Amino acid sequence: MAVSQLCLFFLHLQNLKGFEKAQRHVLTYMEDAVSQLLENREDISQYGIARFFTEYFNSVRQGTHILFREFSFVQATPHNRASFLRTFWRCFRTVGKNGDLLTAQEYHCLLQLLCPDFPMELTQKAARIVLMDDAMDCLMSFSDFLFAFQIQFYYSEFLESVAAIYQDLLAGKNPNTVIVPTSSSGQHRQRQPPNDCNLPDGVEASLFYQCVESLCDRSKYSCPPSALVKEVLSTTQRLTFSGFLMTLAKDQGINRALGALPDKDLFLDPAMDQELEKLVAQVSGLSISAPTSSSGDTANFHGRNSPRINSPWKPLHHRRKIDAESEGSNEETDSSEN
Image (cartoon, rainbow, N blue to C red; front, side):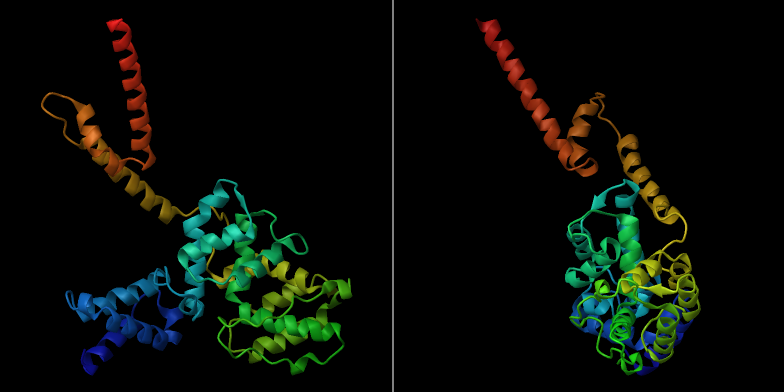
């Protein structure tokens, strides 16, 4: 593609509705798009480079670009992280809707369905927010895990620095010497969780907030709005680190500021439900409107088409039923012969 075409296309990207939040990291997406273009140039050449770039950035705008991608890309930008959170919720919200309780390992398996190399460490940290000192194999509701996972995943670098601040306050050190993480969030430091048992009452909330506010001012990574953090901490005089994480996870103001998950009914997604209804209607339409044979033998029609429109286990059920009937008919034949 000529340089002039790339420039025109870049201007087109700036006008894409819903792409505003990702524009700060447009270079990341351009590099990824070019990389994919080079890897799949033979297939892409069939329908054109311009169409490829248009579809790629439309997927970025819609948030579907992170599906089945490597973790280093999923966590590369705030937009990617929010897109992953939204996709995880939309794909597995039926878990919560059905009232199912899962372990941290089971939630990790769901995460790996969307991102095969998603690190177990992040899942475990999210589970600790919910379970605290309980065993890690305890069951959790979908909503509890999701909101805890949102805080841990989206603000992972921020929480690493806050954990260091908390440890320094417990030890009576000057937390202003804490270094903000500069490495990629995919390279998580193996920091032990703060041991709140050393000081049951935790640390002074006002001093803790001053340190957190200073961290937010100088951090280049995503942080919760300092005004909301101040509001959260204003209700207590002392706090523990685990209590701070739980409060962040449950705060609807922070959830709304992040904007990835709904702030009301977590199990309702009208857009997705409408798409599912359309799909069900299409499948039902295939079954109802399909022509029958001239003899009116619909059984033959369903027998030919059932693998296409029925659930995979239905044909097996039908085969077992047919086998049972055939065995019964054999018995009748044998008895009649006798």
